[in-house]
Length: 617
Image 1 (tube, one colour):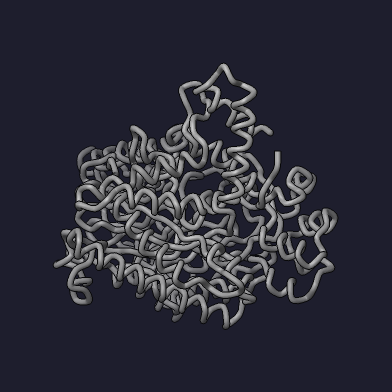
Image 2 (spheres, one colour):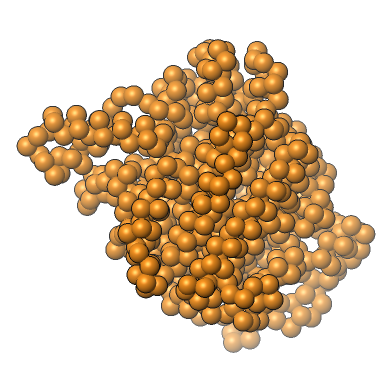
């Protein structure tokens, strides 16, 4: 009813004399649109809070359908530049979004067709060892975050704490102190009144302050706007396995500062990650082995969720295909997937031309390389609909063939665009020139975490397994939303074992395995904390084999997991050539995004299909 009233406000703006009629129209319009797009109540809450345009008084001024139309129209406009039909592109873009089969990253949904028109999610900014560079980058970060982007930094160029500053003969405060300044700045910058900024902070494992960095987030609330990762090299990982000593080097002079045991340092990283989830690991040599434009520079950092390694000042935009919508009668609709890939690449390439970049250096290098990141969400539901258990060799084999298909079609789409529009300017200097005659984008694929866009699409995040069959998600500045997996709900109703009591019981643990339901259903609805860490890493690795950028994936560990379990994950991820790895042990932070067994009473509001299916007023 609240949503219907808010939509009524929209129509009242156009026809205040017909309040009752506009309410009935708004209600009918929303029900029709919801039926067509199958928007959930949670999706509507997220759209209302974050994405739908509002006037100066905070009143919503568009429906979800109008949002998708706004975005489709704005992103289609660059087709004019290439003598193509923008109206045709607009209809294609609108159709894949309104059907919830594809969603672009949040800044595109928020800003396309508005005065901001800043459409990229991912940025990397360089930091050199001078106050001028540190605070110029701080200003650039604020500019990017204000319009919805996330920023990654590598702080390794900064001299270590206690080092002598030549100009003043004083002692340097070290990279951690400047990270705190960046963190505080982000804390007070609210992105377009819709979300707070996110950052990635990276420090090379050879930096003399690496031990301080590893422990930087041990106190809850410190650097809370940062994800932090240690950039580890092949040399370090090999020495850690052999328990050999490793030199820490002065970042400017490369002078050897002191020796540490590499195995002890890896143990320290694992211990801190076990305690708080931070830091992660970035396998920086593997990233640069796959750098498509090595002549344009070395990659030192990633975006905040680590799925996009970028050069200094570079940006990237993302979009994800909803795999849960592509299973028909127990089979993948490969033809539909192919069309979605080609339309998705077209959409994301257009975003680069439609974009109003906040910083000139970013505009320049982004247009030189034209990186995009097309990925997926809803993998867990696709497995379930295909009758595959997530933690099985069958699922691993299928996942590899699936991503190989997507990459093949994404490459074909980029090559096709290059014939019509030209290759990216750095193409001849790139490694791609050895494989293609023409290519539009230096990178084409990435696996993003998908966060709120997966809520809109009504599916699971990225390539993650189900976190739980029923759980509470904290979003939108602390609001808690109860979620029930729609595929489970559908199967339970079709097979006659659905009940409110069953859902309340499952909500207490999040696991179908604890419920009195058919065994084959229990087998398919395995959750993240029930899956062995090995399967998490294997799934990430098979996707990484066929992804240009990187894969955002969290290895969820139960509360009972050990530090030794964390180290095993690290070593396996390195062995299987992942570009980075992140673990999270359930309950290791006082506050987290997903909860099991909390606010069970809240389910009453969503029972009867309203959690993720169609809802009546």
